[in-house]
Length: 135
Image (cartoon, rainbow, N blue to C red):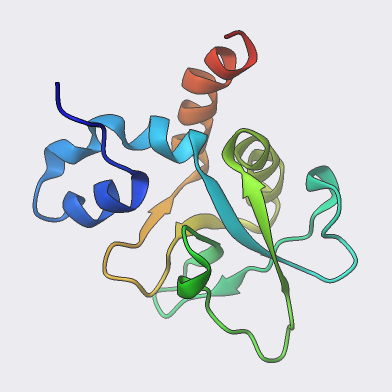
């Protein structure tokens, strides 16, 4: 039986092999991410104020990173990188994204980076939160 591959490997395979998407949402839900939050809000997930920014294509992104090495620098904002588990992060983002019309950007500026919209995250949370809550 083949070993399951990790999230980063799945993301890197997507462009060349769209069938790699089969396990993507489950991996995204279970993974922990580095999020950038405003100082003073880093202690409680439900109170975190995430950094967002406008992109060249007029989208608004809330960046999340699979590795600390991918973190973008925001010299004017001075956000704090915080590691957040997916099962806590995604429901929080469902509260945050509609307010500023953002999309979650996984590893922005990386070749394997992707964006997730609110409906995509809602589907992921609906599919996997119940499994996580009831082992």
